Each structure stands twice: as C-alpha cells, then as structure tokens.
Length: 448
Image 1 (cartoon, helix red, strand yellow):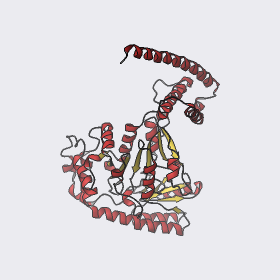
Image 2 (cartoon, one colour; image 1 turned 180 degrees about the vertical axis):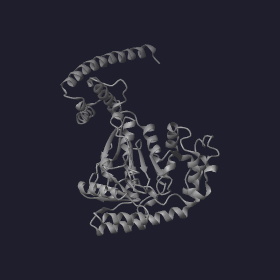
Image 3 (cartoon, helix red, strand yellow; image 1 turned 120 degrees about the horizontal axis):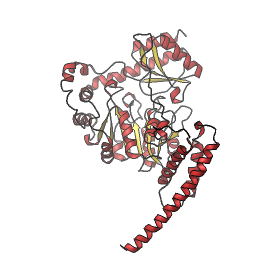
Image 4 (cartoon, helix red, strand yellow; image 1 turned 180 degrees about the horizontal axis):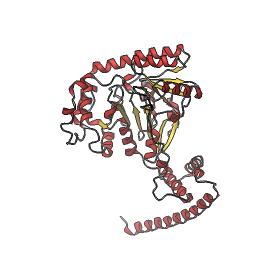
C-alpha cells in the first residue's frame, strides 16, 4: 500500500465532498424559494415531479455507484427538501413516509345497537377452531405457566410444521400473525428510498409496510378481471426493487397465479429481489394448477412463503403465522425478529390444530359447498360475482349499489366489507360463513 498515494486520493475525495456541500447549499436555497411560491403545505410534495427527476438522473448518471444507491440518495434529498419547505413543521415529527400511512382498520366487528350480528367482514373461519383444540385446553391449564416466557423460537411448533408439511424446521420463522413475517422481510431487505412492488388492489398492509421502512410502493396493474400477470409484475421491476409482495390468492379480489406463472416470474426475476408469496388463503384453494406446497423454496433462494393460522385453522384471535424460506433468508429474518414474539398458548393450540387434518379438510369442503350455493343464489337476484379463490365472495357493482347493499345488510345485523380503502368503492367482499349465516344474508338481500 502506497500511503502517500492513498492520502492524495483521500484529499481528492475531501475536495469533492466540499464541492458537493456547496452544491447542496445552492440547491437548498433554490428549494426554499420554490417553497415560498407554493400556496399551501398540502401541495409541497409532488411525487410525479420527483419520479421525473429520478428518471432523468438514472438516464444521465455515469457514476459507478449502483442505480439503487443513486435513487436512495436522491430520495433522501427529496425528503430533506420537503422539510425546508414546511414553514410550520411540528416539533415532534416522523419520516415523510410514515406521515402518509392511513392506519389499517380492518373489517367492522360490531354494529351500534345490535346484538348477535353476523360478521362477514374479516374472512374469519365462522366454524371456529378444531374441537380438539377446545377439548384439550382449559383456562386453568392454559394459564398455569403464564408467568413464564414462551419458547423463544417456537421450536416445538416449528418441528410440528416441518413434520406436517415435510419441510425443514430451521427454515421456518414464526410471527405474530403472518403480517409480522411480511414486515420482517421489509425490515431485513429494504432501506429508505428502495421500492416494493405489490398489486394495485392487494392487501392493504403491503403499502403500509412499505411506508414503515421508508420504501416506495410500485403498483402492479391488473387486467379487467383484477388479475395481475407475469408481465405486469416484471414491468414494475427496477434497479431499486427489493421486494415483491404477492397474495396468492389475492385479497380482496380472490384472483390467483398458477404454479407455472409463479415459476416463470421467479426464473426471470433478478436473484437479489425477494419475492414474498402470501398464502393466507392457500388452504382454501382447490384448483389443480395452484401450488399450495413449499417446493419453490428448494428451487429458489429468494422466495418467502407465508402462512397463517387465522383463516382456515380458526385461530385468528391468537395471532400466529409463519413463513418458510431458504436457509440464508431465514437466518436474516431471525435477526430482525423480536424475542418471544409468539405466545405459549398460541403455539400449543396451533400444534393441536395441525394434528386435526380431518377437521381442516372438512372446513375447506364446507367453504366450497357453501360458497358455490351462495354465489348461485346471488346470481338469481342479479348480483354479479367475480371468480375468486378463498373463503370469501368478491362482488362487483356500481358504487351506489355497493353502499346501499352494505348499509341495508348492516341494518339487518349483517356486516360485510366495503372496499373503498382498497380503491374499489364499487365492490364488496363477503366472507363465506356457515350455511345458516349465508341463508340469512340471501334472505336480507332479497328484501332490498
């Protein structure tokens, strides 16, 4: 190593840093003046303008820095510029992306002045958990060790999952609901200014998670049937892409990608991009071309497959989910997973639920039979349903009709999910409950 030459190079870098500081000072003065010309704080941020700036910079850059690094640097400059233009900035503030979050509210669970409501708004299993879960756990037994922390990594549950699905326990990561495993992925692989791809009408938490980590959402366009395609997904990939979230089947539209389509995406996707395949409703899908297994992890190191106990297993209140991925990715996810993130009771009940395969099969069978009946009855009263997989029906109509039907059902003590927050005010999502619940729903709809 030539120390003198190294010192010369470092001094050159120092000189360049000084020039960059001067340029940033000039830029800040111009940005501040631009802020004075804007009429209100509400129009300070111009995302279309920012994207045009990024496109121009990426086209013109000749630096050896990676393009995603260039994007992150400029997005940080954008955020700093926003603060310069905010005249009355609050003392306590957070990063710009978190300010943009609309808090997730989920489906309504109660109606004022009504008891014994029929809740068809959150895609829960209306039949409840396996009877074996209820038989084997009583309150006294369940709480006898509540003064002790749970198993820190859920080893027993992971071993059970590995046995049931014939997978590797060391590649399983548990979460407080599968939502938490989705967050782990973003925390582990995204920095401020990176990009996360997800469907235009996908699970609301994807965009929230992107904002939490300071990433920018890139929306996958859908066809007229609300389905994403291989090309529409890959079209959104850029040097800044770090994660793709795909619900399969999708919530709330119920569309899905076949095994062959998933394979095509992964074969064409750069290996540094993590694809998270959200299988919250996987147990309900019976289509021959759907892949509800875990073999993709053996083929691709950059995939994360998530599952939940909240839907088909009927344990939504216990908040337990998990994901399966390659050894390398699992190791990284475990570094951002907090200790004791799943309860002892949740782990124990999940193990019992996994042992009752017969009950799970019956739940899936009941769901398909009741769903087929319900949608045929809707057709008779001229309510359009789109083909969907999962334990819910996706209904498309006019915005006015959707609001009227939701309001009418609520007046009758039945809660369905309005989809305004998904950008689908002309649609409703109706959970497939028990036959009795769906008969009551059809009876109520016929009274409109």
